[in-house]
Image 1: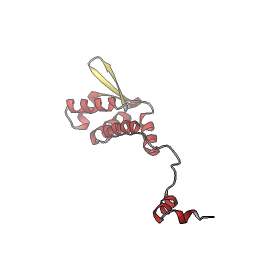
Image 2: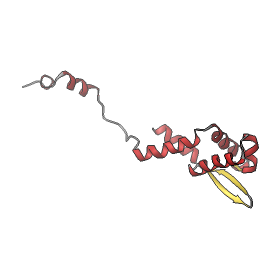
Image 3: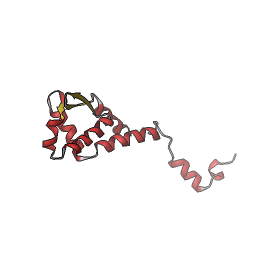
Image 4: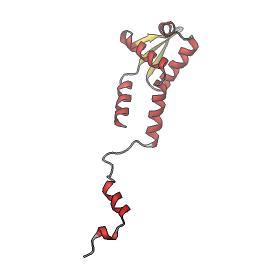
Length: 119
């Protein structure tokens, strides 16, 4: 009987000893792209503050008029940041008369946290 280790070279034996099969499915390319877009949306100090400010308001909803001055940015800049957060699915927007109200999307931050932990 021939020893299998004798038929393999040292490199093949070392590779077989150290390589373990995955125990769960890795993040697919499409999932990585989506997660990266969402993380980019919140990876800005102004946007993180906006999320926090909206969450701090009663019922986790705030009028854009309540967000501009405390943030210390111009209204167009704040509107841009809010649009990015809406597009990322973190905030929702409700137009009431001339004002826009922003609310946290229920479960969006929890889902994002679970996605990051699962990576």
